[in-house]
Image 1 (cartoon, rainbow, N blue to C red):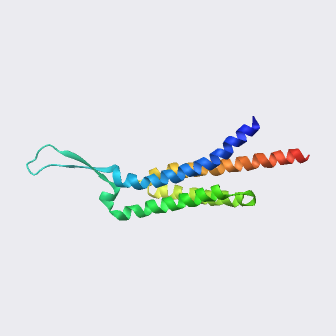
Image 2: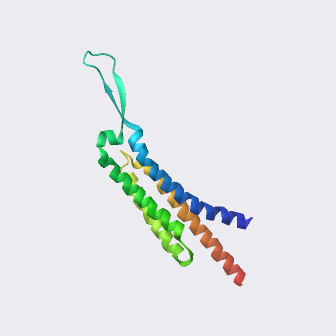
Image 3: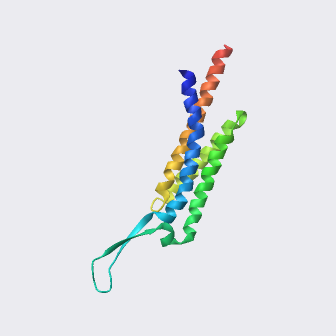
Length: 149
C-alpha cells in the first residue's frame, strides 16, 4: 500500500509539471482564437445592436503574446527543474519550481483583469508537483531512517 502511494505521488510530480507547461502553451492559440472582449455596434441606420467578440491579439496587437511567452518560459523552467532533478538536486529543483510558482502567482495577480486568471492553473499544477516531490522525498527519508534503526 505504501509503495503504491509513493508511486502515485512520484508520478504526479512528473505529470503535473507537464500539464502546467501544456496549459501555458495553450494560452497562445487561446489568445489568437478565443474572443475575450465583447462590444456592441450598430449600423449607421440605427438598426439592432450586434455583439462582436474580439480576441486578445485583435484588441492589443501581437505584443499581447509577449507576456504569454514569459509565462511559458517560467512554466518551462519550473517543469524542467522538477523533471530533471535527481538525488541531491531535488531540493534545488523544488526551490526553482517554487520560485516559478511565485512568479506565476504574481503575474496572475497583476494581470487579473486580463489574462492573469488563466495563468493560475499552471501555477497550481507546478505547486502541487513540488509539494508531491517533497512528500516523496520525506517518505523515502523516513523509510531509510526506520530501516537503519
